[in-house]
Image 1 (tube, rainbow, N blue to C red):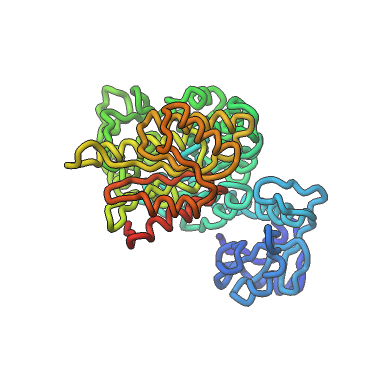
Image 2: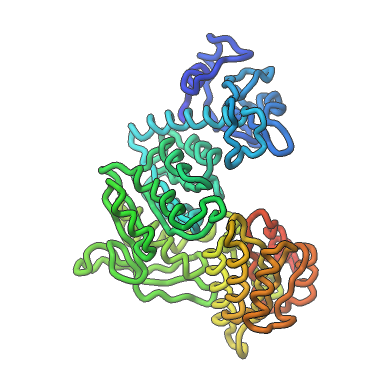
Length: 503
């Protein structure tokens, strides 16, 4: 963050000083980061006191100051130097604040947003370029690719993992410093207006929209409502800005009509401003293609080999390449950066080989129908292409948990995924969970292919792990995928730990 005194921060956020005099607050400078986890506090930090599901950050304020924080942003005095903001009368209850009973968390988050907005305003005035990315799936992977392709051009700040909501977004903005050249922000939404609110905190000069799918369909009610919400990002771009749109998604392509920015279309199926030709996959489903850009007659082209897995990564890489080219990169820089950019955020198409020859694909951080299909397709490809000298193909195991927040489509979408596993000739489908959704997935597989014992349903991750330990053999490939709430990430880690797994 830029250096600010506690007095300046209090003025920015509209808070009152507590347990520190005005004179001292003007002399005490925040020189470090802003943290909401007291264990992450370093000297010079500002600590956020947020209510949690099991504990209240206000109770950890003294420990944070003892660890080096120079002050606390809180909703009540905490016995150490603090900036206190008034609890919101009607708590929002949105996103990370389901457990915010008295409005204290909403107040601290609102103050955090005001602080981030002021820091972003000052930094953009001195040359910071903000890039925002949204979409129903692929945001985190694309954010990681964007960070990789922009790094050769300057200092980049991007969120770790999926820090893309009303807490993670401003927290990431406040990681930027006067030496930061590019700030990459991932923008998620659970309700209409969420993306517009995030864009207002740190207005992007470049926007990227990947796709419109059915993630959070239960929250939005319709795919059109999702599209309208994703369109809030290109709508926030000024005339001097750039909007990168995936032209292969008709709902995304239509957003060219609602932005004032200059539109750059990307495509993997037809010529556009940036497009891919001759896409192939290697034995681990890592794409290779020819990246082309500019007018077709210009002949700008470079060979690209991705280090990430799955055919769906081609569109993500094209969007990242389009941003880098807009920022001044040349084709060779883009190709080299993409070739070196492996999975950076945990539990997202992370492929590792165990010492016994079993391949584990850990994609258990999140899941929706689009990303589930992409994961299954990658699994099927690895089973076929990775057979090598073996006859036939490798055995494939799909270990799948629930896709959350699909609303009225929950049963039908899980049924479709079970049927898709059969159509892709997955050797063994392991459905994890006892709810109706997982029953629909298992039943869909059985009805599609009359598999019998080839599709199995187990109650929990312990039962799934026990089954896999009994059945897996050298050469098998296993996909572990579900929404984060299903808790399958630990299952994937346990599988890797077996047989002294190594990446």
